[in-house]
Amino acid sequence: MRTITVFKGDGIGPEIVDAVLQILKAAKAPLAYECFEVGEAEYERNGKLIPDAAFASFEKNRILLKAPITTPIGKGFRSLNVTLRNKYDLYANIRPAKSNTAVKTPFDHVDIVTFRENTEDLYVGVEEQIDADTVHATKIITRKASTRIIRDAFAYARANGRKKVTCVHKANILKMSDGMFLSIFQEIAKDYPDIEADDKIVDNVCMQLVMRPETFDVMVMPNLYGDIVSDLTSGLIGGLGLLPSSNIGTDYAMFEAVHGSAPDIAGKNIANPIATVLSAAMMLRYSLDLDKEAEAVENAVQKILKDGYRTVDIMSEGCTRVSTSEMGDLLVKALE
Image 1: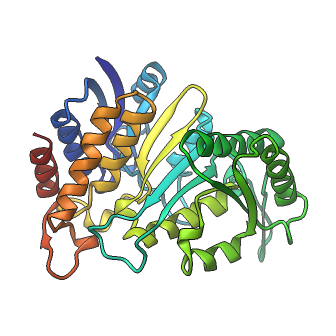
Image 2 (image 1 turned 90 degrees about the vertical axis):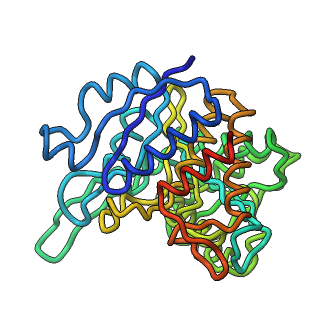
């Protein structure tokens, strides 16, 4: 039996995690869990955003299932997500967006995987107050970080029967930083002659995604663009409540939903647990080689959505609205 670390997070995090752990149990995943309270509420209680024991657990187990953590806007402590990605060099943020036939959207054939470089760009958080009216933010792009995320995107495409990798950039304006990212992409593409390689400017990508999303396959890009564009892809399939993600490094892996902690609905039992459920399925498949259990979880999600059950965020006419705990119970039943 493998032990993984679980961060219960803030806001809606604890109620979502409770549902997910019951679903993993129903899927008969051979797992044990070390669970920790983390985030803003934990800081108020004990003076630390992440307890030392939680770090130690992750460093021992090397796999983390993480619920959303609150990040203050415009003030306060730095994003704990960014802290974890940098501390453990979780350089590849992989976000798959795939249409579900049970969820009605304007697009039926979306199947896009976004590879987002996860450790640099503007997210290094280096800002300087020049004067009362001017702030300077530093964008960092390195050859090392660019090379490994681009190579991972091509390797994933080849291993998973994908046909195309698109580099997303703004090299027409940022000729040195994004220009280097693009040139590295073009060099690595030569090692994958079986995979079509193209590049697009980020603003054009946003337009094309909402017009012809079926033309995209695997996309790779620097950190900021990846954050924005992957959220856009979630809108194509029904929203952030359906978009899983993984944060992968050489030695550690973290799995989490893309959405935030939604403190405005915390404790109301209305949050959608599906994105975290699907993130857990990614964990089963890619870090634990539990393909059978991962497929069972994914099939359960498909069944419940096909049967017309919806949390409020994805509710549509003719469907049955359920709470967080009810969605969890339905998924457990589908797995039994």
